[in-house]
Length: 229
Ligand SMILES: Cc1cc2nc3c(=O)[nH]c(=O)nc-3n(C[C@H](O)[C@H](O)[C@H](O)COP(=O)(O)O)c2cc1C
Image: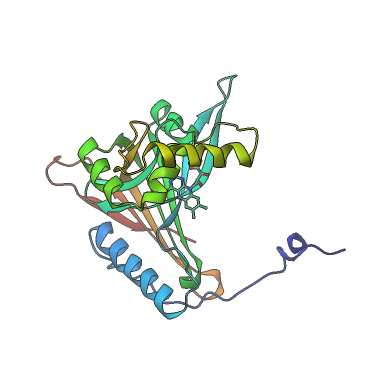
C-alpha cells in the first residue's frame, strides 16, 4: 500500500516567483510589511494562504535531565512594529513557561503559495497589561470564554470534561463582560535577525538576512547580506 509519505522524495514544483534584490529596503519591517500585504492579497485572489498571520513559534525546552529540546507550534501574529512581534497565549502554557526559562524564540511565517518564508529570531518580554487588555477586549466573546475554560497544555480526562468547563465559565460570566484572566496575555519577540526567502528557478533561491547591529540604542540599525540558498 502506498502512503502520502512515500511521495515526499519525488514531489517537485518549480519555484519561479520574483526576485529579491540586493537593494532590498534598509529596514526589514518595510520588506515584511510589503510581503504581509501580498500574503493578504493572495488570500483575497486565490484563497490558498488561508491564514497569512499563522506563524510557527519555536522555543527551547529543558527536560528533567536538563537536556535542551526545540519545540514548535503554530500561533497567530497579532502585531509587528519596531518593538517586535506580538503573540497572545495562556501564560501558564508550556510555551510560556519555556519562554520564561529561555527568553529567546524563533518565528517562521510559511507563505508557500507565494514561494516565500520569513524567519525571525529574537528576545522575549511580556506585553504590558494595558496592551493585553486592549487586544482581549477585541476578541469575540466565545474566544474569551474559551481562554477561561482551558488550562492550556495540561492533560484532561475527556472531551466531555473540557466542554463542561466551557459551560461552567459561560454560566459564571453570564450577563457580564468577560474579564481578561491573569493567566492570559501577550508576549513580544524583539527580533535580532530576520531572513527573507524567495523561491527562484533551479533551486537558486534568494535569501536576504538582516541582523541588528549594536549601534546607539536610539538608532536601531540593520546589516543586510545575501546567503547562498
Ligand atoms: C492555526 C493555528 C493558530 C493558533 N493560534 C494560537 C494562538 O494564537 N495562541 C495560542 O496560544 N495557541 C494557538 N494555537 C494552538 C498552539 O499551536 C498550541 O497547540 C497551544 O498554544 C499549546 O502549545 P504549548 O503546549 O506548546 O504551550 C494555534 C494553532 C493553530 C493550528
